[in-house]
Length: 118
Length: 113
Image (tube, rainbow over all chains, first blue to last red; front, side):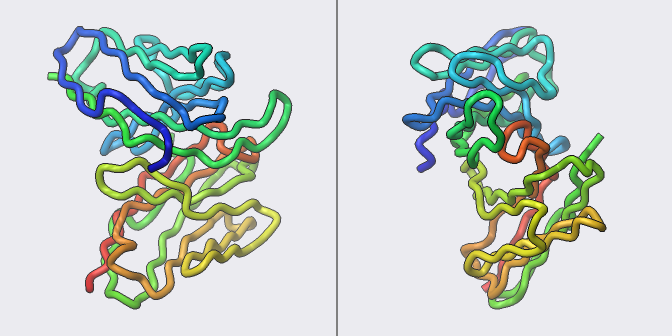
């Protein structure tokens, strides 16, 4: 058990809909990352938050957004869903260095939320 | 554009054999190279990591070999066991740690008893 909790584990929805995925990081970890895993693209970094602030952005679509709340849990919002958005969405947390430092610690991944868009 | 190329896509070895997975990269600014292991239904978990100031790192049966000039690094699993059957991902970042990790596409390893 990594200590990172993701809900829901499975989600089936229709094209055009909007869903919210939730992540609770390990106790004490200030940094949360979101990754998308699909068969053809592998693991793709979407976005990172550190202590409530966006810290880094990857290949995140404009239809997707995320936030990290004061209690450090994070939510990934996916809207106007398309068939191609079907994937496993992972949240990870780490003991991040403070701004200006280097080298966040290892990533601890949750078990993922499997999204199926029909 | 895939920044980290991983091969092979799948690998089958016999128990007790050596498993070798290779990764190549182009970005010379990469300075952190971890390997993650993922079992079915689980998230990836860090297995071992290396920084470019060393050419090899060993932890138990797992060894990373790093060739900076060739821009390649590999994972060697000695005395492979059925419990090692999983998908392995190499990754790289320019931040010295886990920020904006770029992952390879993964290698599915099967170790036959």
